[in-house]
Image (cartoon, rainbow, N blue to C red; front, side, top):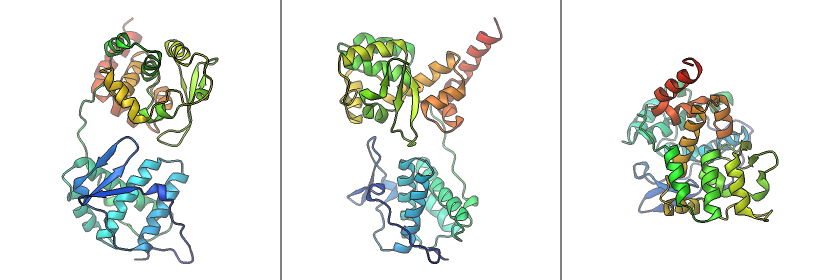
Length: 308
C-alpha cells in the first residue's frame, strides 16, 4: 500500500495541531475547554513512521483549509496516529477490532468518524489507502436529556447578580447562545451598539458570524463598559467564565446555549436563523440540542399558528 504520492513533498503540520501531554501512560488531549483524559485510548505510539504521519498531517491541513473545525482536525489526527501506530497498513477487520476495543460508545464514534473522514479525503486525493472506508459504521450513541436553561433559571440568576460585569455576561449568554470560548475572546470593538449586534470573529468552526443583541443585553453591556472602548470585553478566560457561573450558582454555559436555542424556536425564530446565529453547519445540531423538547415545541407551534 503506497502511503506517499510519488514526487510530492508533504509539509510538516504546525506544532499547534498536535499538543499532547503524557502521564501514567495516559494520553491527555488539550481541547481548549478543559483537559479530557481518555484512559481507554492508551498512550500514543512513539515508533517512527514518518511516511504514514505526513499523510495524516496533510489530511489535517486540508481539513482546516476547507474551513472545517481545527479541533476536529486535531482530534481526528490523534486517533489516526494511534491507529497507524498499531497497524502500519490497517485492514477493515483491524479497524473494526480497534473500534470495538474501547467500551465508550462516544470514543468509538470519534474513532470511526476519524477513519471515515480520512478515507474520504484519501479517495478524493487519489490515494489508494483506506479504500474500505465506506464500510466503517459509526456507532449510534443514545441521546440523553441535557440540562437546559429555562426562563425561570434566567430570572433567578439575574436577581442574584450584584455587579455590572456578571449581569452583562448572563444577558449575553441568554440572548446570544455563545459558546464559553467565544465569550472569552470577545473584544469591546466586536460590539455594534448602533445596529444591535456583535461579531464572533473566532469560533469553533473558524467561521466569523454576526449575532443579534437583545435590548436588555445592550443595556447591560453599556453599564458594564461605562466609557471603555477597547480591550477584552469581560477580561475573563474560558475557565474564568466557568468559575463565575459556578459562583453565581448558575447553569454551565452550554446549558444556556441549549436554553437560548429552545427559547428562540419557541418564539417563532426559524430553524435556519437559529442555525446561522449559533454557528452550526447543519440542522442536525439544532435537533440534537432540542430533541428532548421537540414534542413540546411542536405543540407550541400548532397552538400559535394553527389553533388561533
